[in-house]
Figure 1 (spheres, rainbow, N blue to C red):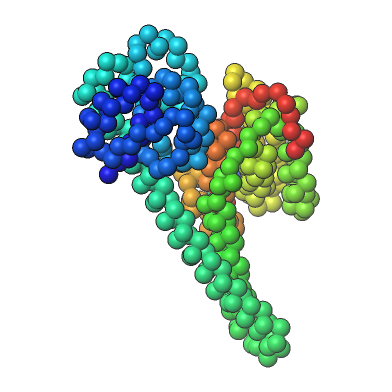
Figure 2 (cartoon, rainbow, N blue to C red):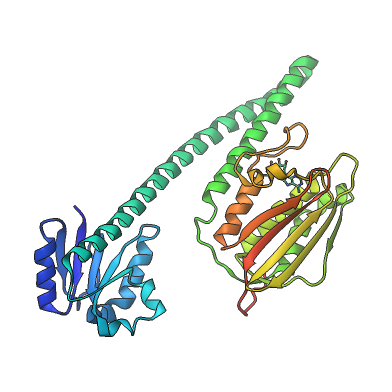
Length: 355
Ligand code: ADP
């Protein structure tokens, strides 16, 4: 049964509500001078209680996230004009006095439905997470053993093995390493954002320089030309996620070029109304229009691994990271004519992190 707690200074209203709701819900009346604890699925407040418990309610809502814990405010009409925007960070619904019973019940049911849905989703997420943990843990263990024995065969028996056997052994090792890579990438994809997103004003230039340093060997090996167009702006983003996003886009730009073509990549960033737009342009193989959306989905690859190695999780991880930062991502491209991947992030405040 849903648990409703009433936080009210007005004793008469509190008594009336308890009487109305007791048959259908598990109702408790809290002393508003006491700290807000104890289990509840919905809180009903009046103005004085809200004033007293404002901060505690916000803190409690935060600890329950991602589950939704609703609070309903009951207030006289004359106080509604005082409602400010910040009120809606604490309270989810409002009912005017004198209370209309049918309206109260309808609002309570809607709020409780949202609460139940969020609890169901949270539970399913936790089950899924536990399953992934178990699978990746066991998978990693099996792969370690397979690769360990493959190495042992190489080291101890290589001289005794025929060419065909060595070829098979090479295949086992290659596929084993690819599977290990896939499990690691999948794990990172699912964990992304779990530690929280710390968006802050960040110098894009510094992040790009870090990425280019990480990719230095590949850039040199491919004799690639990477340039930065103009001055890169400050952006609002989590420096770690941002680095991961750019690193992925740049390594794709280096990878998906036709054989024999030297990669030519340009990075640019502009501040537009209310948003920062980052672009990564390449001279690669391009992407046909029908694939522009699909490539951001997990495991969608447009080429076989023999042609271009990869797990098909790169761009879906990038999209997840961008959305966690409150942004959007897309691509403009034509098959055979290079691509422009763009990332739009919310506009920054002022202070800048050194990252
Ligand atoms: P992977 O992790 O295997 O590289 P991604 O998710 O990063 O996969 O990319 C999905 C598909 O999108 C790739 O298989 C490739 O076909 C295409 N793609 C990604 N980036 C580019 C690019 N810069 N130019 C052309 N095709 C690209």
